[in-house]
Amino acid sequence: MAASAASRELFTEGVRAVLHTWPVLQIAVDNGFGGVYGQQKADWMVDVIQQYFHDNADLQQYEVEDFISDLMDQEFDTVVDDGSLPQVCSSLVQLFSQWQQGALQQLTQTINKLTHNKNQRATVTAPPTQSDEEEDDETQVMECESSGPSVSRTDSRPPPQDGGDGGDGEDGWTVVRKRK
Image (tube, rainbow, N blue to C red; front, top):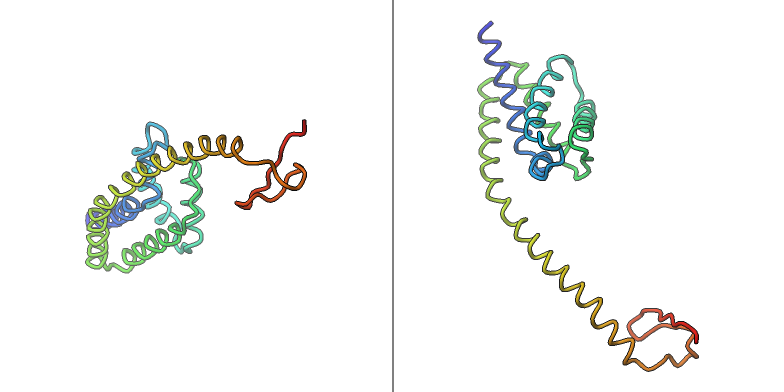
């Protein structure tokens, strides 16, 4: 009985490793999509998913995808459409298959590999923060470009040659003018 509980805990650790290395879930938790208890919901998902596998003997990958998709939608108000859900579910199905077959050493190696990947992911999270800052700069530049020059262009441009009813401007835009 103790060996069974230990091996079941090993599968739970595998589920935890897969979910904690899943960028979609981590983004949802980091950005508060699950509310103030987002991290607790992510930890709760580990238990719920491992129990789902134990309660349903022959799960197909699409069933796991549907289940996790529903959890993400209900708990984090998140729709996973980046293509990562099938990969996550495939990993979970593979881990459960290893656990069922008693390949605990292989399961442990897979968990260690996932945990190692998690440590690598932590270093990758810095560049998106920098791109967010760059994106803010671009937004500010775009706002300046769209409000400043457009006013001066309109005032300094000669009226269109086609009688003022609007036409294709030299930059491909259709100019619409108010009739006086």
